[in-house]
Length: 293
Ligand code: G1P
Image 1 (cartoon, rainbow, N blue to C red):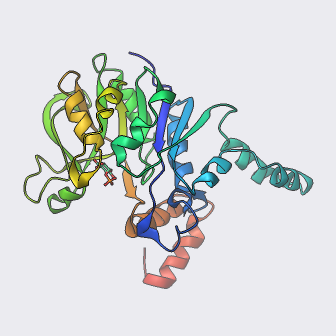
Image 2 (cartoon, protein in one colour):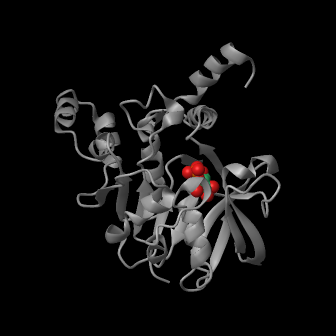
């Protein structure tokens, strides 16, 4: 099985659900506790052993590139002031030199198009795809769980993380049909992007983590549009599934859809409660607000 070295992060979305916060700032830079959403997702990829981080960005997203670079002024000020902990924090979260690449999706034509924009940077090898709207809280992280699962699957397998939603919310997501079990995973029999109410093949939705074979790029090159008039990744995966195996993996842990306000707020509460340095005071503050938590 070929090693998964590269991960793609589509970060071109406009963040209209967070206006006015995202008028001049990318939604991926909103913070969950004290690190931007995108940092949580990149950390998940780093933990899984990813070596190259490919960001598909858009206009007004330059600050994401800055976030993953050194900030000399800040570093020298921290050093002068002897702020060792903060310096260590910055150092730990800095990707290695030359391990990030940035390309732009020039028009918002859909997730499939964003992924296709990364084709030259990924090249001819299987890769991970992480949608930064979804922030996972689990130990080990979702992508690490998936890479472990991948080891027991046949060559040229594609693997997508899934979780369950309320059946009446299935129309918001890509939904998979469930086939026979294969170790930790199951065979995907069907995929539908944003199924009409009552037509979903199950209540397991594609939750924003994928391991894909590079042949997906040839299919995406056709630029066929699907649900919502967008170039849909799910439609390209359906076609790839005609020649390559697709598996689903029900990951262990919690996910937060930080693309909407409730998910984002819940992520902040959950991550704050899991931080030993913050949890006791935060719990007290919550108790004052809403009673026993
Ligand atoms: C995208 C995918 C969808 C997936 C969802 C997870 O949809 O197209 O298959 O279930 O992310 O968040 P979007 O949220 O961009 O509409």
